[in-house]
Length: 68
Image (cartoon, rainbow, N blue to C red; front, top):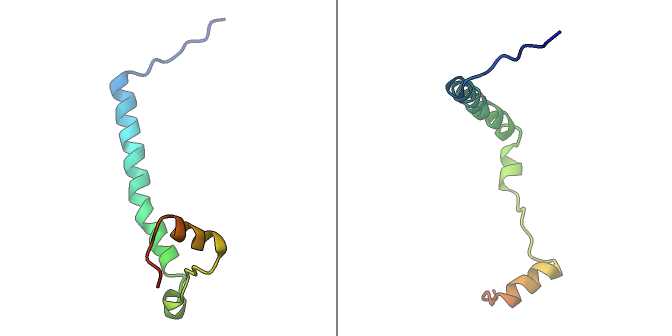
């Protein structure tokens, strides 16, 4: 018994790839909007970056950033 392989042409492959990419791109903004709404205004305004750690201070010193 021989198994028959169905050959997919190059154009059909690229068409299918394009449709799949468009479907993923259309769903992307919906996911990011849901995540952006999870933070309250207080959480958005809080300070997040702290340059108090020694490795960050060393990075600034080595790269000659001006000190405050």
